[in-house]
Image (tube, rainbow, N blue to C red):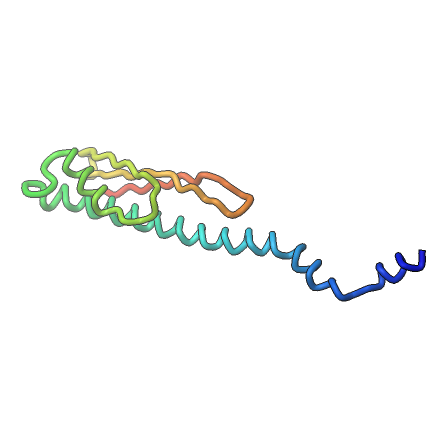
Length: 124
């Protein structure tokens, strides 16, 4: 019995126990911040590709972007972000030449795994 009283009063392993309690929430927070930044980067890259493809279809329609397949391939070539497998759709609508890009970003923050849909539209 005397041995157990001394065990509960001992403070030598307190730092390791506190670290074990804090390490998982801290890791989740750090990985969530990293993936959130990557998701914003993917969304910005998607927006850039969509805007450039819409502009190409309206300004340079006779050379590079003369049909819908060429516009979609041009947008896909411009996207340089994380692998979200983007798909691009071209349409000649009332506002001009519209290009829409969609993709899904897989956010993985240690214990939280979710898919975030991304979408961008540009019209020139």
